[in-house]
Image (cartoon, rainbow, N blue to C red; front, side):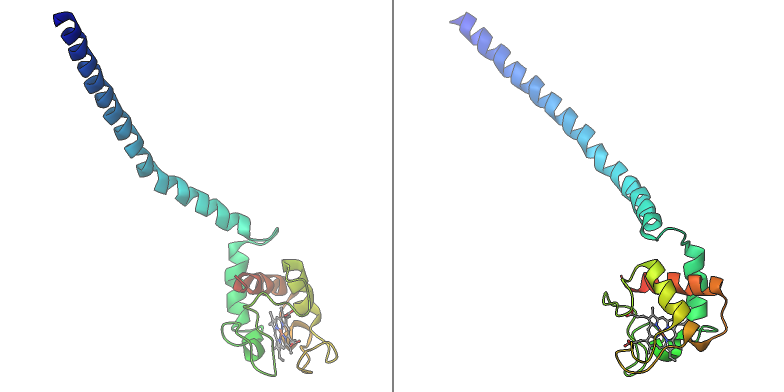
Length: 151
Ligand code: HEC
C-alpha cells in the first residue's frame, strides 16, 4: 500500500513539474508577439516599395502631385483630387480605365498623347499633356501620381 501511495505522490509531482514546464513555454511564446510589430512594420515598408511600378519612385509621385495641381493643368479637367469633372475629364481615382489598361505605361501614353474627341466618352478631347507645356519627364512624374490615385 505504502508503495502505491509513493508512486501516486511521484506521479502528482510529475504533473506539477510538467505544468511548470508548460508555463515556461507560455512565457516564451508570449514574448513572440512583442517582436511581431517590428517585423510587420518592415514588411509593410517593403510592400510600399514593391507596390510602385518599375521605374517609378516616391520622388516622382510627389513631384507629380505638384505638377497635377499646377503646371500640368490636370486639376482643371480632372478635379483637385482626381475625382473627375462631369463633361470634362474622367475620374482618375477609380479602377475603370477608358483609354488604357490602367498600367503605369498605359497612363503615360494617354497623358503624352491626350484623348481624341472621337475616343472621349464625353466628346470632350484631352489635348496632349493636357494642353500644358510640361516636359516628357514631368509627364512620367504626373502619371506616377495618377497611378497612385486608383487605390
Ligand atoms: C482640357 C481638359 C483636360 C486636361 C487639362 C487634362 N485632361 Fe486628362 N482627360 C480629359 C478628357 C476629356 C479625357 C477623356 C475622358 C473620357 O473619355 O471620358 C481625359 C482622360 C485622361 C486619362 C485617361 C483616363 C482613363 O480612364 O483611361 C488620364 C490618365 C488623364 N486624362 C490624365 C491627365 C493628366 C495627368 C493631366 C495633366 C497633365 C490631364 N489629364 C489633363 C481632359 C483633360
